[in-house]
Image (tube, rainbow, N blue to C red):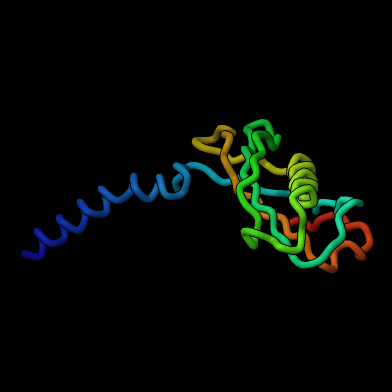
Amino acid sequence: MTKRLLRTLFLIVIAALPIAAQSSGGISAGKGSHPIVKNKPEPDWPSTTKKRSELRIVLRAVFTSDAKVTNIHFVETKPKEPADYSEDEITDLIDKAKEAAHQIKFVPATKDGKNVSMWMELEYAFNADDKEKAPAQEAKKP
């Protein structure tokens, strides 16, 4: 009875390994890694946009195998419908977030020892205090 239970448990674990690898983007432990961000510049406030309340811009982008950020797409704002900003202001903030995303410096993800491209989600916060801050210092390395 114990051998049967152990064998069943072993088969369940073996069957679950491919599912676990898929849930992590197809990169399983010991065989690869996610991109390592070295520097993620903060976006500048557009000069035409007056800050009112916090707004977050969510983007999706490809972190390529040759360490470039490409295919940057707008996903959403948080809150979903910011009442404090006009459509033009939101568009300007999205453009600034995309400009900042293009400047990200990173070490590419790897799989089986080779650099690979990977989709990543980025979030940029435009806080009410940001516009008065001095220019950002160089990002600290993790």
